[in-house]
Figure 1: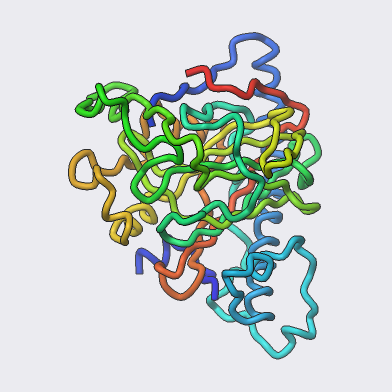
Figure 2: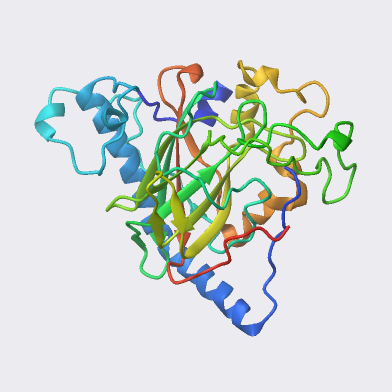
Length: 349
């Protein structure tokens, strides 16, 4: 059963990246103003969009019992149609179900690429798949990512949501180790880059775990099965994302990128992060007892803070997937994008 109260309430009872992109030209300022106005205009639609997804999940759990995790289609339906009321006529929405309206206040992610993808994005080879965990150990985490078009305030179907994040010990697929000459490198002390190390090189071309992309359905939602991300020095726990409004599927199950409309990062509340830090295998993070975790408010290059500019909220709304934390999380977020936008799909760090 998914708990109605927020996970925070229940708990209470890498690297070099580009900084925030400041508008400089009159055109850039005008675009920013227009997006900001659209985001606030869309705020009620965003709130209802996320609340409807949470209600749908509660109905599915109550109507069908405990969904079976091995069959992903049993866990998440392809669409969010209303369930047959006869199926749930003899069941109650108990106190522990997310049927209340979300408390979201303009819970859209940043609408322009104020933070880049960083050095660990692979411009080719991200599989088109919903289950990105592969054989990585960690806390089961289901990500429910909604996308709306700020020009219409409507859910945006058939856009490709591409995500990637670190494993439980803070490493990215393909980047296991620092350069040999940097094995003893110490993190930056003080300043905007506090805690950061030189990015690890890509030495394992074949690794794809915790990377994947999936198109939004007709209701503007893409869902992923993964594990809760680990942390690494200098960075708060985060999930990277890109949104492509055009792409070409390739025979090997990956895609060729087309029009890029959004680059951003999602976060989790610090109280959630610190509870999961106590769980295996997160306790095996190699920097646990040395550099330790970076809290959201200390995130290097102000990425966490920059992601909140103009009132946007890039933090997942996380709920218990079962009755206790170690059964996993389901985390919701809605991001507003300008479907007409187009950005370069490469890192300039």
